[in-house]
Image (cartoon, rainbow, N blue to C red; front, side, top):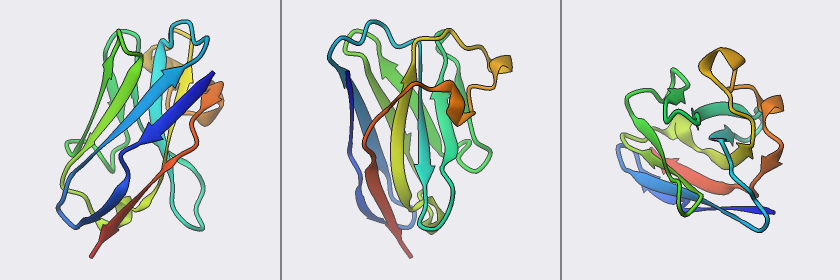
Length: 126
């Protein structure tokens, strides 16, 4: 089982990027998939997650700027990031779990995800 994140890079403030996370191997069905990030010297934090229902849940810091989506057939997760800011600079990790989480199950907590990708670096220049 492997989660392969890609799409990171260097963009100016206000720019856009789209991250992808492809699941491969004997994955079964990933019912909850999300994105987390870790900036230098900081702890890993929640960015967004997509529930089995299709609902997207976002951290307040990225709400209205980032959009999470999923190609169910390809088992690939995306994160469209617009209006990027220097404080968005971080390594972005995708995470997946087979649990059918709902919003009340706190899907923004790291401990709720069993599988993690290797991360892709996003750098927003000021």
